[in-house]
Length: 135
Image (cartoon, rainbow, N blue to C red):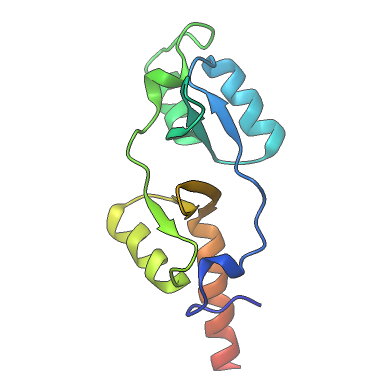
């Protein structure tokens, strides 16, 4: 059981999903649906994580009339990753996400992105802790 003061490394997470920045938006939609995730890491020619793109970006592009078979992930990707070290506390990272106005954080171990956690992941920890304290 993860607690708010525990480090992020105590989460049981899956490997993050990566997509190439040349992927079309139609293929991005397939990936998001297949893996049931809201965001994926974007990789460039070097293979390193160069940004993130998610369902909100996709919806906004569709609303603007983007051609799903022409526009690529590179056209939408947010290049500034909000990151947190795996040793940072859950509550501190939750605050950082709120302050930054974003829903996902790339969790790093050294220079490697080990996971992507969502506000939902962090909120679950905070709510469970509150319920334990008030039960």
